[in-house]
Amino acid sequence: MDTNVLNNLLVELKRGTQVLAVLSQLKVNQYGYSLLQALEDKGVLIEAGTLYPLMRRLESQGLLISEWDTTESRPRKYYRLSDDGLAIYQSLIREWHQMIKDMNRLFEEE
Image (cartoon, helix red, strand yellow):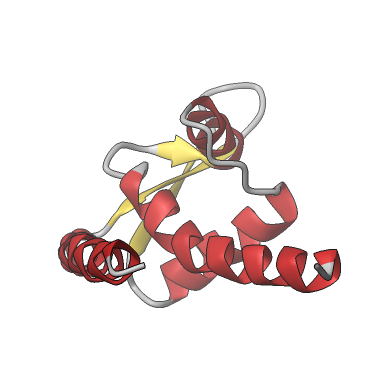
């Protein structure tokens, strides 16, 4: 078995779930590090170098709203789902559940 091929396919598979994982945690305000921790606490590991560009992209697509909190000594940019982001997240969840059903049917045939 070629482990490079396997590793590349696993990276692709995980990349497809990262948006859904991130959106799932942004129903409440989160800053980057708190989001990384929340995901890690649930067993989802995303590197900071992947997360921050993803959040900027989701914000540019109108799925996230951000605001700076400057009340602490260290300013933090907080993100949360926009109304469109919530609607898209809910649609993605429905699609995710359907995909799981479809894939399980395929696997049951083995």
